[in-house]
Image (cartoon, rainbow, N blue to C red; front, side):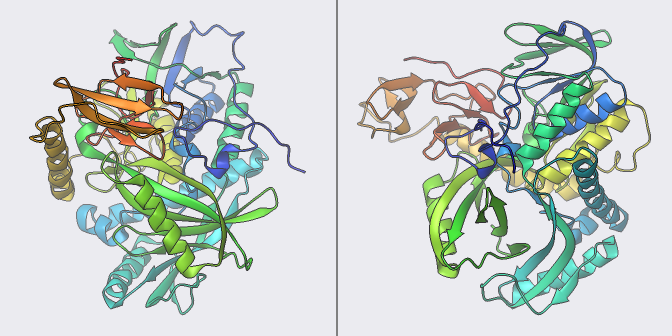
Length: 509
């Protein structure tokens, strides 16, 4: 029987199924000297940071993983945990923007990441529900079927196994279906918890609840400063999903939220495999069993961070589920953040600052590209050849591939930067705010982010994001203040949850 542990934390008020019954990864390295000179400082304790850290520790490097909250707190704790050989950037798009050779490399990268996860599951005896699955991509009309045909043929050219089939694993009417074998799913927190345990066994140090607010480079060394100490290292890895501070990645990547519900079914007809429709904002489906209970996980309703309606997203997902499935109960509902890169592919590897490495822009494929990041960055640090280095280089220049997306996303950012400040309908008085709700209001000429808790207590923050000065919006589902420009997120007290900000919101009350 599987051991039962305590609940782990996540970056929102809603709970994902991965948080329950998992061993909390506390700092078991308190007896070790954290002031030592490390070979590698890794900032971020999700799948990217843990994979990178364990790979380097296995090579004899001295590594420290510094996490602002707790291991798995961010997107790794909120993923739907699909492991695919096809991606949000489709193979026809990759071929068009980067060429057929690049398309083959991306396909190879996906296969490598799944194989690597599977090998670690076996060699480290990780109990994380890893299962190989078939993946189904289904079209809802003739136009989508034409696009699907292009995906099928480009996938073949890339070396990905896929076939047209005449059935779907879901009770949803469709026009056509293609099947990708050898996909996979797993329990992400159980997986990285085991990586953390092995990392520590090999001498790696994990420091949780340690927010790095400044990084300097003096000579050949990096100095990562937190409230209580300074970490020194020869190399520094940003495994933070988004790169902190003001930098080019703020403009190369756009922050989005995705929503998932976990439902039980009265008829017990839980579908096998993993499925995806082809709407512009697509739905994704898979079944996962936890402690003897099966859940159907349905996701979608994505929108830019700070710009959509989370409650409406969940209502739409539940309505979609009830239209096609015999829903007994909605047991889970949660959301998570991801970053869409301007040209479709993630940015992984050496930054322009010698000795510094980044991993960002994973789109909706974070478990794959987070794993791949560890493999690429390990080889970069060890000065080994890696066939994926050039394609995913953060310094690559693809003016055609990324230009349209770049202009669209940053025009959106500029609009929010201006419109949020110069509202012609300025509020003259502090309006009543419902219990458990928040709102940005103007009071005595000053914008304030106001939250009223269930007991009527009020706290007031500056609504100006400390990253680039945009105005945050209240997320009523996750109970957070979210920035619509670059995806920075803050808790109800103004503390940084995730994203590029390095300072908390100013607190008034």
